[in-house]
Length: 431
Image 1 (cartoon, helix red, strand yellow):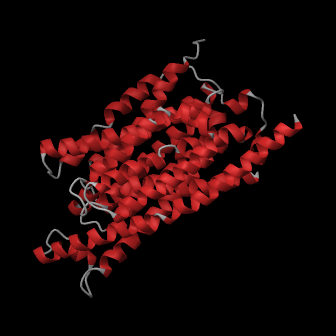
Image 2 (tube, rainbow, N blue to C red; image 1 turned 120 degrees about the vertical axis):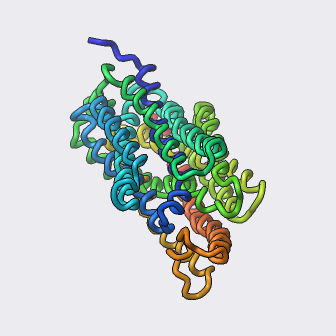
Image 3 (cartoon, rainbow, N blue to C red; image 1 turned 30 degrees about the horizontal axis):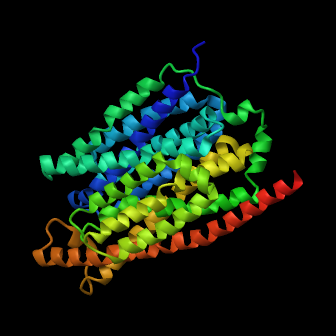
């Protein structure tokens, strides 16, 4: 039997996550363009983007329940197939039938693939590095912002090189096929470990009962907020600030670039502050960053992007690492429920805020305006100018509404920090 090669499995996992993040970065870069080309309003764009976020939790929760039964390898092969189907359908969106439904279905396939990658790779990384979970999960999730950096730079660079033709975005999406084929090849034929929960002999009943512990429920609720703060903003920043700055896509590049660097240095940060301390600091920086993004202009937007990147940098992997370290009996299901809950919250919030965004824009247009007409390619010069001004005013207002969430998280993580210190002191007193 082939020996388990931990480093090769970790590298392959990072490549699979790279495809997931490329889909986020490239979609964020082309979302506004899809709206123009296919005459989609913000609510329709929000629904399409949200599809990836509820396809993700569907896959990650079901995958989390199946991973101990069918194994991590089979899940990753499924992810490979779904990624290929989703990418190809996206490239040909609008060629056959209604463009909205074409994009909806293709984005759903990609979302399911992304969730399946997380369902398999999060427990895989925790199993490969049982004594260093939070740090290695941060290193693994480094490739999420890393892929967004690559994706946004690809969009920006190819737009500059090839122009803004209607076919350019299809080339940008098709590029994702290359790393997809590579990670599928790397996983094929490899020997995998069983999950940590199975290896330690924790029963299925004990695992599911651990999901009812108050601390786990608290972390699930906090995951709603951390995921929305990070992923709604990064996925929509190009749309929200497109009329505020000519380089809105580079704001996302700066944010995710900071996240890459931060996660690369996760080890000493987590060791010095503890996971709960990192989460509190992250919420503070995220709130400050959103405030700057929603209330400044010009070069200060890039300062806001840096601060926001510092804030959301550790949110996702540290939330998973905290649960894996402090609630280990929840196993793969616990980790994947966290991820699924976060993505589900983002999908609902994104669809809701898409409608709110349209209402904000309408409120700034002349009375009786019909948004579809203003979004139409046939709109007059005056209508296009009015729509641009409305978008410029409405985008920052959506960011300021979202600012409420990290402010709530500051209070929640302050309570978590106090609770964990008390629990640690109680343990020390009994030993």
